[in-house]
Image 1 (cartoon, rainbow, N blue to C red):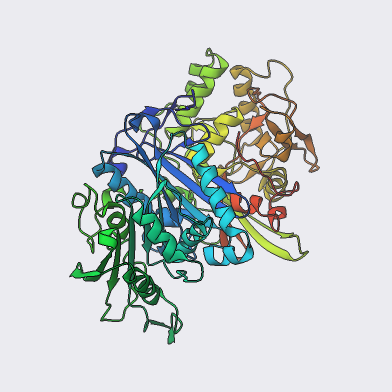
Image 2: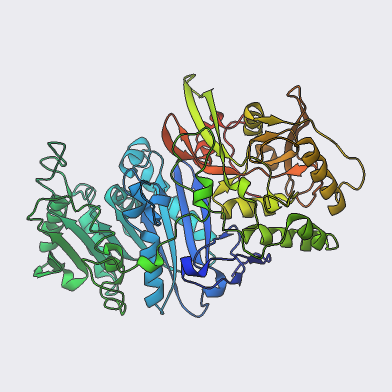
Length: 601
């Protein structure tokens, strides 16, 4: 397997997460999660597909075992983060508590000792796979390409593949089926969790499914639905006279009946229909109370676990289909440090999506000056590793956890104007406490690793300008000219900034004190460079134009890393920095370079 050679150490609160901290490599392009010994990768594949891959770290994978990759397509209206799920506090967005696909997947990992399991959660632009497919006439080919590109970054030979979905995510699966005359042999399980609305005779879905199932006795089709024909919302029926999953499921049954008998049974409150000798199982809840079960069947009833384990050795090992939830110990905790992060100056209620997840500062954490003296004698590479590990452990002052809102209005591609709100750390990344902290220059690789772990992003040139414009405290640059790359100079410059800042509020938004490490399209001009910009003078002009003159390992006293909360709002709607920068129609809200296609270092 391909691995990063870089070792990362993440300290996780065992009482919250339920697992011990570990040290491990990650696959190329993956980042170490602070939860559950996992590695993750956020990908955007044009046009308009966003996804997160979640896998155990390589040290938790058994190379002697086969690997299964599960593709799970999000329901209408949900982001990948909401679909993966996490614990929520009172008043937070309820979408995080619907599917819990990540937790169900972790539970399956616990009981499935036969396979390595990798989860891919996919989201369509506009949060609707059906709407996305209508925009792209070649959607079937695009979906096939998306699957291929994802499998290409997972360093495993010939994995088994499961396709699964909830709600409108079923459209992704039907798009995949439409991609060729036959379903590929490497797909061995399909799971429709109240998501088979798009089943269509005209597209020969039934013919393809039957041929695929009959070709291998180990393949399975699982459909879970309910009687939604009379469901109403705000006085109106939810589905049309021909729509809904109840009718779609019976269309499927009609096709399967042409191949032979259907075996019917009852259990777990469902009517079960086995077709093709049990290769296909279709389950329909009669819903006599006429209530909305659309999401309950997935999260509350353990629907994903049931679909994944039906007719496998794990079928009876994890819990009971129908509830109660069997995976709660595997739900990601609320964002660590959330109480501090939510104390935002001059902002609306906090955005949803990625949350700031800075671990609590350890009781025995070193002060900033002591830490800098400890690393002063280290080589640059060892110093970077120490800085990374110290930040990931949570040795970050409290004032940096209280993010500040940046409010702007900007024109987009159709020349209309939109309001934008994003949140930034009030100062550059520091090690230490409120009483003893030092701003720490670092490589862009370290900066990106820390930002990802904390649920944050790095700014663009335009964002640096916006931050300066709205800073409550603007200080003039104080350049130094000797020993620019030494820890001694790092400390000297930090002392000068603190001398300037005397009498001013700690935690107020400050600017003009450092150059920013930024993301930029210019990084595509030359490999292995760092992009820096800013250090505005009091007249608002930056000392440093956007440049990539230095290699990515170069660090000097003037470099600073400003964290940007990944979640943001555009015209009152929640999205992410990544999504905005990838969208040609709105990238100008955050970028003066247009779409920024490469956000990694």
